[in-house]
Image: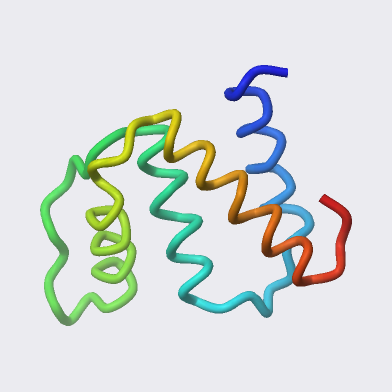
Length: 91
């Protein structure tokens, strides 16, 4: 299985198997790594300070901006595995 296929498999596991109770910090990490892996560096302007949710997402994505697509995919897979393990689900 190639990296792209494994990434897509774990993206589906993240959507279907992770509990809603994972922390917002973990959700932001997954969001940022997913965006970096699929779209590359941030391609939008920074949302205003009063738009808290979008601003947090943008800031998280910006924080991983230097990662290559492959590095972001690997980090995403590792994070999903870790969260599934913590949740008691099989990876």
